[in-house]
Length: 385
Image (cartoon, rainbow, N blue to C red; front, side, top):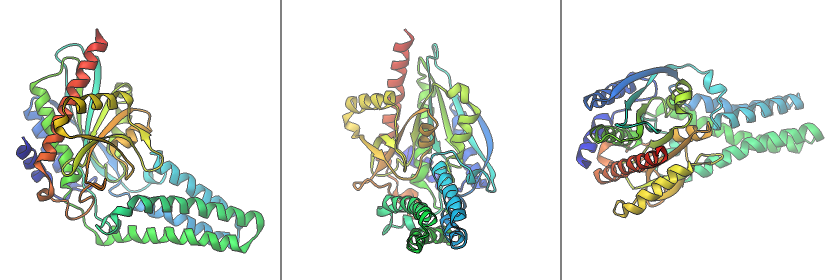
């Protein structure tokens, strides 16, 4: 099975940016594999940004503009800074303002449904995103270890700049203005990183992130089509435009709001190298707790299958599809694999190739996800009786 999973990764592991023809080709390949298993498959199209860079470039530019404005109009600078801070917080927590105003291209989710042999007592949605990301300097081997710290400094700089501009407006102290210029300058450096990302970096092959998750999703769908659950209606969704801001799962939730209100979501992402974990919380700021029901089910599978060596952890780096699901009030858990330092191997870097994906890690994640599906089916059956 591990080699079969690796072959799927190898086929998918070509640069396939969000809302690009290559992403669409990957979706068509996945749809074909799903249909061959006898599943009902459909494309659900939507429009999404091709990158997150320009959203955050504009957001990080606002404190510098506010600081410049405050030289002549102190309270005008405060208002601009406050508006930027609010938009920054909304963007982080999936209530986008700027992200919805930028140019978009066509993307799609691939949705396959599997009906149970008995009464459908529960709906479970397995997710894995299709697209791959551009590389960037802050994902380089020498800098990626401090990625979260850098983000926290950026978030702190945003707040501090706004606070100091308010102090300047209230007191007229020029020192407060000069101090506000320092964190605003730091955010300008971040703008430079984003410009460098768009101008000089290329899309990665995305073997681990996230051809690995898609390979596990497809194998899981095939296996469950053969051994259909009794009480679990199962959706398998390969999402588009995750790397540009989790837009695919946003469309899924908006389009199927009523159907998914009580659903459970299992997100499979970066599971091709390292040790597989289920994440009890995720999110950059704040952290969203995974659904208790799903964590308990993962605990049960981990206890029943200690040979798999699946661990429990938290994930505090860039959002996954599950992060948006949790932020919007639904129930989810993520399966991710990390190295001994808690990092995602070859994350958003040119070395994210199929040669650096482990068949054993893929197999472990597949077996754990398969056991988890049947654990949830048992729970659904018990609840139905």
